[in-house]
Image 1 (cartoon, rainbow, N blue to C red):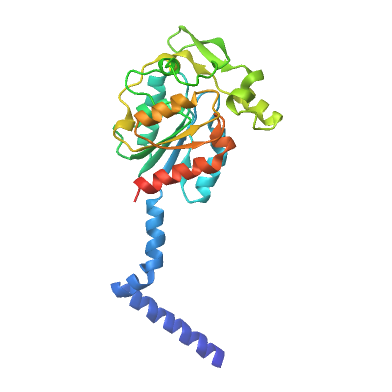
Image 2: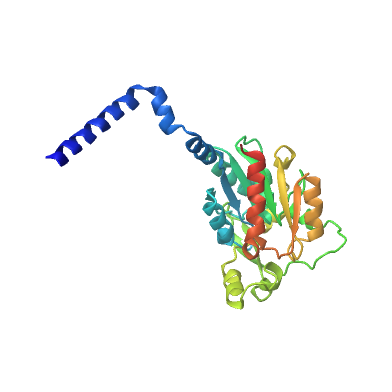
Length: 284
């Protein structure tokens, strides 16, 4: 009997407490809006979406180690496919993709993906920061071809590409470029991966159309959006000197890391740190 009385009393007390909370705004505030809850809520709101854009001769899987770290740290991550068919159309595709994301965006580009984000982010107020990882950061009128032809103090050998034909949507024939699989490891990953893993990357590489390399870039988003840049000092696909030039021209906050072109896969820690640094500096 005493147990039944105790249970009944507890139920009654709970009902009274619920009534108080339901009709007393200040009581609700005390329970649901305490300092700890507010801090967690603010942190959740402050985390932007990080969009990772791959470049040529790779795909979004190259971002996997970085994506895993960002997601562990509470970021929403998206890594859309980059068509690699032409700078103009690739940028239009990404711009459309970005417009469907609500809230602040940290936009990250690797290699050719840097040229794409430079054009796609223009005029999008949700893009709070641009992060270039061993990437092209063209100015208006630049193309990948003209940037690669720019004299530098320490030039690198041309990327060993193999051309092949493909049918374009308008019925004409296009040309696309693939890195010689036998040389992929030394050019793209600096022979830092196990042989089997480098061979898998070489087999899975996505070719870059010549249109992507020769089309001129438009007005650069980095002129109006804060930018960060990582120079890969052992890069054999883009000259590190060219990376430094583009970073300086874009007024980007720049770090240098010893690593190959696919540095976000071989050195994901520093890449993740730079992205999160850009996030903290621009999203509050």
